[in-house]
Amino acid sequence: MFETTSLISPTAITSSGKRIRSEEMILNMGPQHPSTHGVLRLELVVDGEIVTDVIPHIGYLHRCFEKHCEKMANYQQVIPYVDRMDYIASMNMDWGYALAVERLCGIKVNERVEYIRVIMAELQRIASHLIALGTYGLDVGAFTPFLLMFRDREYILDLFEMTCGARLLYNYIWVGGVSHDLPQNFIQKAKEFCKYFKPNITECNNLLTFNEIFIKRTANVGILPADVAINYGCSGPMLRGSGINWDLRRDDPYGIYNKFDWEVIVGKGEMGTLGDCWDRYICRVREMEQSLRIIEQALEQIPEGNVQEAIPKRIRPNPGTDIYVRTESPRGELGFYLMSDGTNSPYRVKARSPAFVNLSVLPEICRGYMIADVVAITGSVDIVLGEVDR
Amino acid sequence: MILQEISDKIRQQFPEAVLETKIEGQIDPFIKISPPYIKDVCHFLRNENDLQFDFLNCLSGVDYGKGILGVVYNISSLALKHKATIKVEVPVAEPKIHSVESIWKTANWHEREAYDLLGIQFTGHPDMRRILLPYDWEGFPLRKDYKVPEFYNGMKIPY
Image (cartoon, rainbow over all chains, first blue to last red; front, side):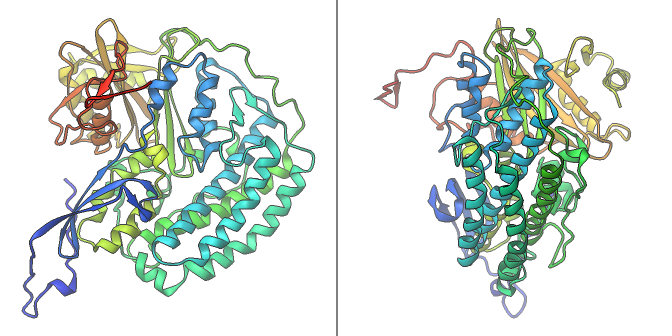
């Protein structure tokens, strides 16, 4: 149905305009390859330097997440496992699961908890995008931005450590509340971070975003047309990079996102064709600015309250009820399908991880490009293998 | 569009397809479709002008126990901003459902996952292989009667 026209490299055409075909070869990229961001094996079918097909092999990091959930003693015990799915955006993962259980049981949380969750999720979104952008630069050969972005990410991790003691896997957002209230000087430190981080986005733009070499590597590469993106179920910056104005924070509201003044960032094809790697990249950069806007407003408005008053002692949803809840994680639509059989532990938990779905479009957008472009395209999808394999 | 109207529309087009429309007492109301009709119904849902379900959010295989397997389709429309849940049930003795891969490409990997973990076979799927587990794994772990094997390729599994 969606035929991608294969782009013929100029080197593979004779002067009379005839295309030279060499014998096809299979090349394995990964599972141990720095640009696959973890243990992913891409089976490339190459014709000379041109990629004619890509077959992703996943599952090297499969930890039976869904089977584990069914064997848990209660619903709350699943949260540390959810942390380990997308290990660089654990707060968003926690929130997605906690929200699903809350909606399944009809638990309402108070204002302060909602504000804390928004602040944490947006801080985490910045931290996650910083890794995505930094390692993307690394993939296409820019080393310095990576170091600067990891420096900035440290400040966010310090804020998290201050709040809940953990730097990577937090187990912070619980069903009905959060594990710790904000420490006394958190608001002030977070405000300082916002002030400190704003000029650094400009620095990142000067170093990487508008760098001539970077644009040459990413613009017009890995073009994902809007209809293909929707048909493959892409979400997050992948979908918005293709020019579709869709963000679950606004279009299927959860939490208190509708209280804040912010915009959904959409790719516009500024440096090349709409939906290329550069568009996906710039969506992430501009989303960080929007996240800062949300955090600044939330820090001003946050009310007082008891963050643990709605935490239930025992969770026992009605038998036979099920629910699908979707939230916007840094990578896209994170969905949890929960089903209860009336006991203390969930009957079925299915995680719809955004990276799993986004990765499935890879063969479609890699065909016809060079092997080096596959690295740039895989980086722009921004996968976390912990979440792909679960 | 609310679920009752969607259900009525399907019933108009395919009189025997809808087995049940459950709205009361459900957090997520759903439509249960008779297995032979699933592909036609999904095709109708995507292409009809006032439905336009262009986005398959999630496809989950479920083992309901008592010899029944099921698939839950969570679909939504980016254009019209509505969503729906479709369910299909098949007996475990013959777990065959028509693939919806040709309608939403998202289903490709999700159906492979449902096959991998629950052993539901999707007829008409172009590439029905295991996806998360090793290709030579035996059994379907998310089935409720699954027993953890003692050996894998002759190696003892210590836990």
